[in-house]
Image (cartoon, rainbow, N blue to C red):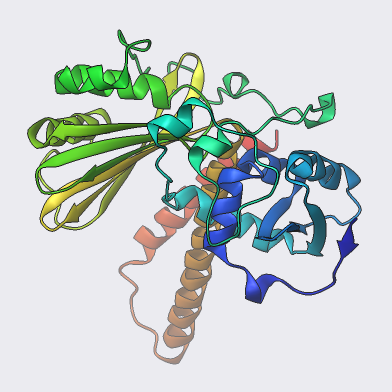
Length: 352
Protein backbone atom coordinates (compact mmCIF):
# COMPACT_ATOMS: atom_id res chain seq x y z
CA UNK A 1 0.00 0.00 0.00
CA UNK A 2 1.41 3.40 -0.99
CA UNK A 3 0.70 6.68 0.77
CA UNK A 4 1.92 10.11 -0.29
CA UNK A 5 2.57 12.88 2.21
CA UNK A 6 3.05 16.55 1.33
CA UNK A 7 5.30 17.16 4.35
CA UNK A 8 8.54 18.95 3.73
CA UNK A 9 11.29 16.53 4.73
CA UNK A 10 14.23 18.90 4.41
CA UNK A 11 14.33 19.84 8.08
CA UNK A 12 13.97 16.27 9.35
CA UNK A 13 16.39 14.45 7.06
CA UNK A 14 18.89 12.21 8.84
CA UNK A 15 21.87 12.10 6.48
CA UNK A 16 23.59 9.24 8.34
CA UNK A 17 20.46 7.11 8.03
CA UNK A 18 20.05 8.04 4.36
CA UNK A 19 23.67 7.11 3.64
CA UNK A 20 23.12 3.78 5.39
CA UNK A 21 20.04 3.05 3.28
CA UNK A 22 21.86 3.98 0.07
CA UNK A 23 24.59 1.56 1.07
CA UNK A 24 22.21 -1.25 1.92
CA UNK A 25 18.86 -0.88 0.14
CA UNK A 26 18.56 1.61 -2.75
CA UNK A 27 21.89 1.91 -4.64
CA UNK A 28 23.39 5.30 -5.42
CA UNK A 29 22.93 4.86 -9.18
CA UNK A 30 19.23 4.11 -8.68
CA UNK A 31 18.81 7.23 -6.51
CA UNK A 32 20.48 9.28 -9.20
CA UNK A 33 18.60 7.74 -12.13
CA UNK A 34 15.13 7.84 -10.58
CA UNK A 35 15.63 11.07 -8.59
CA UNK A 36 14.76 9.50 -5.25
CA UNK A 37 16.23 9.24 -1.75
CA UNK A 38 15.64 6.52 0.85
CA UNK A 39 14.65 8.54 3.92
CA UNK A 40 13.92 6.01 6.66
CA UNK A 41 13.08 2.42 7.52
CA UNK A 42 10.81 2.07 10.56
CA UNK A 43 9.63 -1.48 11.22
CA UNK A 44 8.04 -2.53 7.92
CA UNK A 45 7.50 1.07 6.73
CA UNK A 46 9.98 2.40 4.17
CA UNK A 47 9.87 6.13 3.46
CA UNK A 48 11.04 7.27 0.03
CA UNK A 49 11.73 10.85 -1.00
CA UNK A 50 10.78 11.54 -4.62
CA UNK A 51 11.54 14.55 -6.81
CA UNK A 52 8.90 13.64 -9.41
CA UNK A 53 5.79 12.30 -7.71
CA UNK A 54 4.33 11.36 -11.11
CA UNK A 55 7.18 8.98 -12.00
CA UNK A 56 5.62 5.59 -11.28
CA UNK A 57 8.69 3.74 -12.57
CA UNK A 58 10.76 4.99 -9.62
CA UNK A 59 8.21 3.67 -7.13
CA UNK A 60 7.91 0.35 -9.01
CA UNK A 61 11.68 -0.13 -8.87
CA UNK A 62 11.91 0.51 -5.12
CA UNK A 63 8.90 -1.72 -4.42
CA UNK A 64 10.58 -4.62 -6.21
CA UNK A 65 13.74 -4.09 -4.18
CA UNK A 66 11.73 -4.18 -0.96
CA UNK A 67 9.45 -7.07 -1.92
CA UNK A 68 11.62 -9.63 -0.12
CA UNK A 69 11.48 -7.52 3.06
CA UNK A 70 7.67 -7.37 3.23
CA UNK A 71 7.80 -3.57 3.44
CA UNK A 72 5.25 -1.01 2.39
CA UNK A 73 6.46 2.22 0.83
CA UNK A 74 5.35 5.75 1.64
CA UNK A 75 6.56 8.67 -0.44
CA UNK A 76 7.34 12.27 0.39
CA UNK A 77 8.17 15.03 -2.10
CA UNK A 78 11.65 16.51 -1.93
CA UNK A 79 13.25 19.32 -3.88
CA UNK A 80 15.69 18.41 -6.63
CA UNK A 81 18.35 20.62 -5.03
CA UNK A 82 18.05 18.77 -1.73
CA UNK A 83 18.23 15.36 -3.39
CA UNK A 84 21.37 16.26 -5.33
CA UNK A 85 22.96 17.86 -2.28
CA UNK A 86 22.45 14.71 -0.21
CA UNK A 87 23.84 12.50 -3.00
CA UNK A 88 26.86 14.78 -3.31
CA UNK A 89 27.45 14.53 0.43
CA UNK A 90 27.12 10.74 0.22
CA UNK A 91 30.03 10.55 -2.19
CA UNK A 92 32.19 12.34 0.36
CA UNK A 93 31.21 10.36 3.42
CA UNK A 94 33.05 7.41 4.92
CA UNK A 95 30.76 4.42 5.32
CA UNK A 96 30.58 2.60 8.63
CA UNK A 97 30.86 -1.09 7.91
CA UNK A 98 29.55 -4.09 9.80
CA UNK A 99 32.16 -6.78 9.98
CA UNK A 100 31.05 -10.28 8.94
CA UNK A 101 31.85 -13.37 10.95
CA UNK A 102 33.36 -16.35 9.16
CA UNK A 103 30.48 -18.68 10.01
CA UNK A 104 27.71 -16.28 9.10
CA UNK A 105 29.31 -15.43 5.77
CA UNK A 106 29.36 -19.07 4.78
CA UNK A 107 25.59 -19.47 4.90
CA UNK A 108 23.56 -16.33 5.24
CA UNK A 109 19.76 -16.62 5.32
CA UNK A 110 17.56 -14.34 3.28
CA UNK A 111 15.79 -12.04 5.76
CA UNK A 112 12.03 -11.75 5.95
CA UNK A 113 11.89 -8.55 7.96
CA UNK A 114 14.05 -5.42 7.82
CA UNK A 115 16.45 -4.55 10.58
CA UNK A 116 15.50 -1.53 12.71
CA UNK A 117 17.11 1.78 11.77
CA UNK A 118 19.38 1.71 14.81
CA UNK A 119 20.74 -1.71 13.80
CA UNK A 120 21.76 -1.79 10.13
CA UNK A 121 21.60 -5.11 8.26
CA UNK A 122 24.78 -7.12 8.63
CA UNK A 123 27.07 -7.29 5.63
CA UNK A 124 26.69 -11.05 5.33
CA UNK A 125 22.91 -10.63 5.13
CA UNK A 126 23.18 -7.97 2.48
CA UNK A 127 25.35 -10.25 0.36
CA UNK A 128 22.39 -12.63 0.11
CA UNK A 129 19.87 -9.96 -0.92
CA UNK A 130 18.33 -10.88 -4.29
CA UNK A 131 18.56 -8.35 -7.09
CA UNK A 132 15.23 -7.41 -8.69
CA UNK A 133 14.76 -8.14 -12.35
CA UNK A 134 15.00 -4.87 -14.23
CA UNK A 135 13.40 -3.96 -17.56
CA UNK A 136 15.50 -2.26 -20.22
CA UNK A 137 14.54 1.26 -19.18
CA UNK A 138 16.03 0.73 -15.73
CA UNK A 139 19.41 -0.60 -16.73
CA UNK A 140 22.04 1.95 -15.95
CA UNK A 141 24.72 2.93 -18.43
CA UNK A 142 27.59 0.46 -17.92
CA UNK A 143 30.66 1.96 -16.32
CA UNK A 144 32.91 0.68 -19.08
CA UNK A 145 31.04 2.78 -21.62
CA UNK A 146 31.84 5.99 -19.78
CA UNK A 147 35.32 6.99 -20.86
CA UNK A 148 34.94 10.73 -21.14
CA UNK A 149 38.61 11.65 -21.39
CA UNK A 150 40.61 9.66 -23.91
CA UNK A 151 43.34 7.31 -22.63
CA UNK A 152 45.94 9.73 -24.02
CA UNK A 153 44.71 12.44 -21.63
CA UNK A 154 44.84 10.35 -18.46
CA UNK A 155 47.41 7.95 -17.09
CA UNK A 156 46.56 4.28 -17.38
CA UNK A 157 46.34 2.39 -14.11
CA UNK A 158 47.91 -1.05 -14.51
CA UNK A 159 47.12 -3.63 -11.85
CA UNK A 160 48.63 -7.11 -11.67
CA UNK A 161 47.08 -9.45 -9.12
CA UNK A 162 48.36 -13.01 -8.71
CA UNK A 163 46.30 -14.17 -5.72
CA UNK A 164 42.66 -13.40 -6.50
CA UNK A 165 41.65 -17.01 -5.86
CA UNK A 166 43.86 -17.46 -2.77
CA UNK A 167 42.58 -17.24 0.83
CA UNK A 168 42.63 -13.66 2.04
CA UNK A 169 45.13 -14.56 4.76
CA UNK A 170 47.77 -15.12 2.08
CA UNK A 171 47.83 -11.39 1.37
CA UNK A 172 49.45 -10.59 4.73
CA UNK A 173 52.57 -12.48 3.62
CA UNK A 174 53.12 -10.27 0.55
CA UNK A 175 55.42 -7.24 0.35
CA UNK A 176 53.67 -3.87 0.34
CA UNK A 177 53.76 -3.19 -3.44
CA UNK A 178 52.22 -6.57 -4.28
CA UNK A 179 49.72 -6.36 -1.41
CA UNK A 180 48.48 -3.05 -2.79
CA UNK A 181 48.12 -4.60 -6.25
CA UNK A 182 45.94 -7.36 -4.78
CA UNK A 183 43.81 -4.85 -2.88
CA UNK A 184 43.38 -2.63 -5.93
CA UNK A 185 42.34 -5.58 -8.10
CA UNK A 186 39.51 -6.24 -5.65
CA UNK A 187 38.35 -2.68 -5.02
CA UNK A 188 38.37 -1.89 -8.75
CA UNK A 189 36.03 -4.76 -9.65
CA UNK A 190 32.81 -2.75 -9.89
CA UNK A 191 30.63 -0.07 -8.36
CA UNK A 192 31.75 2.34 -5.63
CA UNK A 193 34.68 0.54 -4.04
CA UNK A 194 36.35 1.51 -0.77
CA UNK A 195 39.38 0.42 1.23
CA UNK A 196 39.57 1.26 4.93
CA UNK A 197 42.93 1.15 6.72
CA UNK A 198 42.46 0.89 10.49
CA UNK A 199 45.15 0.32 13.13
CA UNK A 200 45.50 -0.49 16.79
CA UNK A 201 48.66 -0.34 18.87
CA UNK A 202 50.39 -3.38 17.42
CA UNK A 203 48.55 -4.39 14.23
CA UNK A 204 46.53 -3.03 11.35
CA UNK A 205 43.58 -4.27 9.37
CA UNK A 206 42.19 -3.43 5.93
CA UNK A 207 38.51 -3.63 5.00
CA UNK A 208 37.19 -3.77 1.46
CA UNK A 209 33.63 -2.74 0.61
CA UNK A 210 31.70 -2.48 -2.63
CA UNK A 211 28.64 -0.24 -2.86
CA UNK A 212 28.59 -0.08 0.93
CA UNK A 213 28.60 -3.88 1.41
CA UNK A 214 31.57 -5.30 3.29
CA UNK A 215 33.32 -7.88 1.13
CA UNK A 216 36.44 -8.83 3.07
CA UNK A 217 38.53 -8.02 6.13
CA UNK A 218 42.30 -8.49 6.25
CA UNK A 219 43.28 -8.86 9.90
CA UNK A 220 46.54 -9.03 11.84
CA UNK A 221 48.70 -7.01 9.46
CA UNK A 222 52.19 -6.24 10.73
CA UNK A 223 52.21 -2.54 11.60
CA UNK A 224 55.30 -1.85 9.47
CA UNK A 225 53.70 -3.53 6.45
CA UNK A 226 50.47 -1.63 7.15
CA UNK A 227 52.27 1.73 6.97
CA UNK A 228 54.20 0.67 3.88
CA UNK A 229 50.93 -0.05 2.04
CA UNK A 230 49.60 3.42 2.95
CA UNK A 231 52.86 4.90 1.64
CA UNK A 232 52.42 2.95 -1.60
CA UNK A 233 48.93 4.43 -1.93
CA UNK A 234 50.37 7.90 -1.45
CA UNK A 235 52.82 7.30 -4.28
CA UNK A 236 50.04 5.96 -6.48
CA UNK A 237 47.96 9.11 -5.98
CA UNK A 238 50.88 11.58 -6.03
CA UNK A 239 50.51 12.48 -2.35
CA UNK A 240 53.75 13.30 -0.48
CA UNK A 241 54.92 10.27 1.49
CA UNK A 242 55.83 12.26 4.59
CA UNK A 243 53.54 11.62 7.60
CA UNK A 244 50.45 13.82 7.79
CA UNK A 245 49.61 15.92 10.83
CA UNK A 246 46.16 17.01 9.63
CA UNK A 247 43.72 15.05 7.45
CA UNK A 248 44.83 15.26 3.84
CA UNK A 249 42.89 14.27 0.72
CA UNK A 250 43.93 13.92 -2.90
CA UNK A 251 41.97 12.92 -6.00
CA UNK A 252 43.45 11.54 -9.20
CA UNK A 253 41.77 10.36 -12.38
CA UNK A 254 42.96 7.28 -14.19
CA UNK A 255 41.97 4.91 -16.99
CA UNK A 256 41.58 1.31 -15.85
CA UNK A 257 40.54 -1.37 -18.36
CA UNK A 258 39.15 1.37 -20.65
CA UNK A 259 37.07 2.77 -17.80
CA UNK A 260 37.41 6.30 -16.43
CA UNK A 261 37.98 6.22 -12.66
CA UNK A 262 38.50 8.72 -9.88
CA UNK A 263 40.64 7.60 -6.95
CA UNK A 264 40.14 9.60 -3.75
CA UNK A 265 42.69 8.97 -0.99
CA UNK A 266 42.18 10.45 2.46
CA UNK A 267 44.88 10.02 5.10
CA UNK A 268 44.25 10.89 8.76
CA UNK A 269 46.53 11.15 11.79
CA UNK A 270 45.09 9.18 14.73
CA UNK A 271 47.13 9.52 17.91
CA UNK A 272 50.13 10.38 15.78
CA UNK A 273 49.72 7.32 13.53
CA UNK A 274 48.21 7.19 10.05
CA UNK A 275 44.95 5.63 8.92
CA UNK A 276 43.45 5.99 5.47
CA UNK A 277 40.50 5.41 3.17
CA UNK A 278 40.56 4.93 -0.59
CA UNK A 279 37.38 5.46 -2.58
CA UNK A 280 36.86 4.55 -6.23
CA UNK A 281 34.21 6.37 -8.26
CA UNK A 282 33.14 5.38 -11.76
CA UNK A 283 30.17 5.43 -14.10
CA UNK A 284 27.08 7.30 -12.87
CA UNK A 285 28.68 8.13 -9.53
CA UNK A 286 31.70 9.70 -11.21
CA UNK A 287 29.61 11.64 -13.73
CA UNK A 288 27.44 13.01 -10.94
CA UNK A 289 30.46 13.92 -8.82
CA UNK A 290 32.10 15.77 -11.73
CA UNK A 291 28.87 17.62 -12.47
CA UNK A 292 28.64 18.72 -8.85
CA UNK A 293 32.27 19.87 -8.88
CA UNK A 294 31.67 21.91 -12.03
CA UNK A 295 28.55 23.44 -10.51
CA UNK A 296 30.53 24.46 -7.43
CA UNK A 297 33.31 25.96 -9.57
CA UNK A 298 30.75 27.84 -11.67
CA UNK A 299 29.14 29.31 -8.55
CA UNK A 300 32.54 30.34 -7.19
CA UNK A 301 33.49 31.93 -10.52
CA UNK A 302 30.20 33.84 -10.66
CA UNK A 303 30.67 35.10 -7.12
CA UNK A 304 34.19 36.30 -7.93
CA UNK A 305 32.97 37.94 -11.16
CA UNK A 306 30.29 39.81 -9.22
CA UNK A 307 32.91 40.93 -6.70
CA UNK A 308 35.12 42.11 -9.58
CA UNK A 309 32.20 44.06 -11.00
CA UNK A 310 31.66 45.76 -7.63
CA UNK A 311 35.34 46.67 -7.39
CA UNK A 312 35.37 48.11 -10.91
CA UNK A 313 32.26 50.15 -10.09
CA UNK A 314 33.95 51.45 -6.97
CA UNK A 315 37.06 52.44 -8.96
CA UNK A 316 34.85 54.25 -11.47
CA UNK A 317 32.98 56.14 -8.75
CA UNK A 318 36.17 57.18 -6.95
CA UNK A 319 37.90 58.41 -10.11
CA UNK A 320 34.86 60.50 -10.99
CA UNK A 321 35.13 62.29 -7.66
CA UNK A 322 38.90 62.65 -7.79
CA UNK A 323 40.54 61.87 -11.15
CA UNK A 324 43.95 60.17 -10.66
CA UNK A 325 46.14 58.06 -12.96
CA UNK A 326 45.18 54.37 -12.91
CA UNK A 327 48.45 52.50 -13.22
CA UNK A 328 46.85 49.08 -12.84
CA UNK A 329 44.15 49.59 -15.46
CA UNK A 330 46.06 48.10 -18.45
CA UNK A 331 46.86 44.95 -16.45
CA UNK A 332 43.21 44.65 -15.32
CA UNK A 333 42.04 45.08 -18.90
CA UNK A 334 44.41 42.32 -20.03
CA UNK A 335 43.09 39.91 -17.37
CA UNK A 336 39.46 40.65 -18.32
CA UNK A 337 40.16 40.14 -22.05
CA UNK A 338 41.87 36.85 -21.25
CA UNK A 339 38.82 35.75 -19.23
CA UNK A 340 36.52 36.78 -22.08
CA UNK A 341 38.54 34.63 -24.49
CA UNK A 342 38.44 31.62 -22.16
CA UNK A 343 34.70 31.95 -21.53
CA UNK A 344 34.05 32.25 -25.25
CA UNK A 345 36.13 29.12 -25.87
CA UNK A 346 34.21 27.22 -23.19
CA UNK A 347 30.87 28.30 -24.64
CA UNK A 348 31.97 27.23 -28.12
CA UNK A 349 33.23 23.88 -26.82
CA UNK A 350 30.05 23.02 -24.93
CA UNK A 351 27.54 24.75 -27.20
CA UNK A 352 28.95 24.34 -30.72
